[in-house]
Length: 360
Image (cartoon, rainbow, N blue to C red; front, side, top):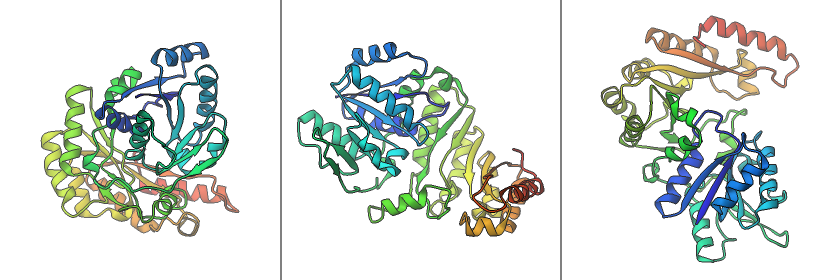
């Protein structure tokens, strides 16, 4: 089967979902191509699709990108109607009603590693595919088939490394950039209202373990492979919470990473998971920058509206630990909150950031 992913642009970061699905499909003998459309006119896009002759037109999209890609698919299908149009990613996961849009044949909700491959293989064999879990389908008569959520991926080490060649051949500027993205775990138990995780946990409840982790060896070997084949001067581990790992994981990582990789590391942290031990281990790992959510400097708003579950006192303690360990801090903040006095609270957040002395 030939699968063609269409994407407006990479946004100068690796689209790990597309890359991982490509690796899985190629592993099973399918052909995969990525077409970036932003700099191509209608004629150029259609020409490239017709040359490749895909069986599936695939889109992995976030909310905000959805309108462009729904229209892109509509345009492509008006010229080339020999493919099934499949949408996955965050937008169809949380807004599945998009299945009602013209030429949207199928949407995948949640993880696609198991069930997108199943769909492709059923199509290849000419089998009935309308019962594929995680998917909603629109039949030719307009009937919508809504399948239940299937199991989450159990062992992340079983998933092949993301297909970076696919992404970097499509975007040479991204290939040339020294900072590259990796992920070492999935899931988050916290219930912050401004994040997707609480909704995702509800959607996938009973379908497997919420928190899943790659082994240290798996993430180290992937980084090595990228280092050997591409320019790499910063490793960004983009987990929602890098610090949430099984006992002993950070200790093993802090021993192996500086010896086997050594390149500066960036990661995301939650202040309530930062301790003196964590600070020492991150410094030992050559972690030079952490991204840390402050969100709001007003404790009451942060607790009641955002459900951040972290007091300002703990944030101050975490930043002091990072300063002592010479790890630079990038704070993340939310302004314009839906409250009676948003500007007043925004200024509190600014004052709090000034007190923390972040680097960015």
